[in-house]
Length: 117
Image (cartoon, rainbow, N blue to C red; front, side, top):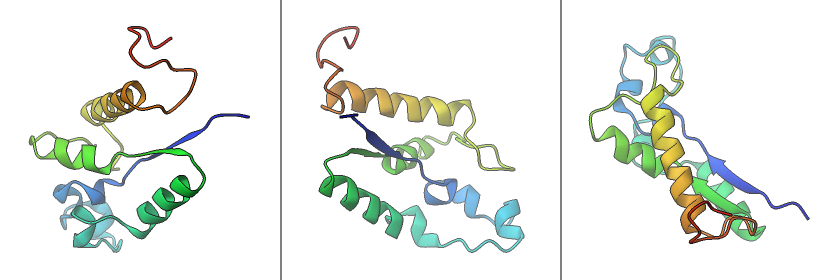
């Protein structure tokens, strides 16, 4: 009886071309990075989306949001380890807030009320 939702958090390799440069410590050390990750969905994204649909679990993939944000020229990650910086956290939180306030993700969140209650 517990309501759940799933959010896919992409790797910076999926939206930021800077993360795929030879100067990136992960790439420099031999991590396999595919150029198509910047424009296509990965197998795990397809599988999670399909599983969510089949099991009636709300699903948000943050990849499109992060790809759009990176086009503004802002860095969303720390260059050394790939974790989100303040801009990355802001982009993700705004996307999640928009998703929760515009979709029927949870029955206990009433759409259209100013405080979400």
